[in-house]
Length: 320
Image 1: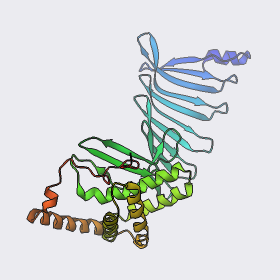
Image 2: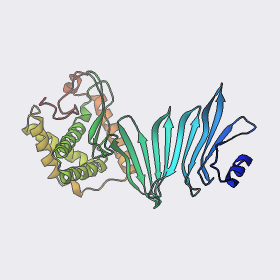
Image 3: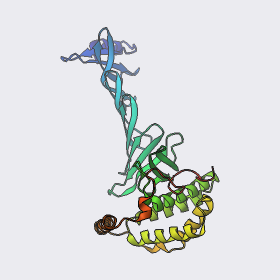
């Protein structure tokens, strides 16, 4: 507090803002509460005749507790931090003045990191002991609720699709290339089936069914590297394809879903990642060997731009 404000305090007058400048030319303006406790300090730099925020801006409570700190560069916000009502330390990062990341350090030691996009946010929650409740869970920015949606791009000759149920991605990216890949077809059917059922449950407001489908999707995702589960998927798909027409996608998916749920996959346990990777490597070698030695005629005849109903991840595809 400068000499002027000390005199004003002695005379019972209200405080005035103070301005100071350091040797580097940084200007700090300090505002006070009526009791002369610090209310706000803001750092500026000169831009011609104007002052623009460049540095920290800190707000205090009347008890002298720091409430909010913002960091600016050339008058554009870069970061802000504050304590929420429940004691959570919230740190927000900005890019080009737009919020892009939020980190919440909870009073119980846990931490939630949110990567924020235009329409969606990916959240990861870690407990104090380091265990992760969920990683990259997708939330709608509009209502801040877990999203059931399909993200990606689709065109006449290319596609790239990620399916989410109740905020959780349910499997690997489908597509990403410029040609139809028959090896992805069963996985696409699996994801499409789960997604459409989750969409239906959400639309009807059946949260219990949505949670049930979410649990099924997460269990299946755990088992994707397990050869036994892949064999079950293949068998259920082939049995469904032999009895149902792909033109009626609802019936096709319902039959596939029922066969899969009755297959007993729930009793399987995910394999050790190293073991799974070795098995996949061996399988890929065998597949490549077979393809090199004697490619099947029907595989050679598949047009590179062909897409089948089971490969396109859309809502009720085939009934549009």
